[in-house]
Image (cartoon, rainbow, N blue to C red; front, top):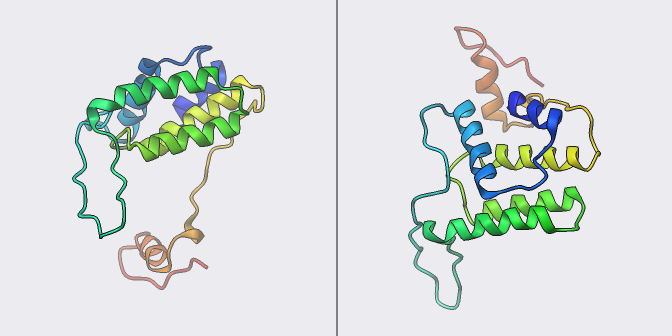
Length: 158
């Protein structure tokens, strides 16, 4: 993701965000993280679970409705007077709640937020994230530590 983020830092986001820009950004991120996997708006529907009596079940919008949500999202990014951080949080929520994309939503949201910060003059340099191995669940951390050698080792991670 460093390449796309670096390009965003060099030039920021375009002055007007369009749905096609967001789709292009998502396509670029998908090509970086999952070459060969199709990118773009989600094209499948979710089957609704059987509700328990008295409860309502949230069901994301159908794929046919997603272009309208994307257009609304782009308009929000362009027209909202909220701070870039609040705007980024709401963009993140909208893409997650609508399940707009099948993959790489987190990376897309991070790239958009970095671009919003850059355009607002809040950042000049990007600090790339590092692995957060200690934050992993213990069994996963042990497994990741054991992958270093060819024989099982006692994890040296604390």
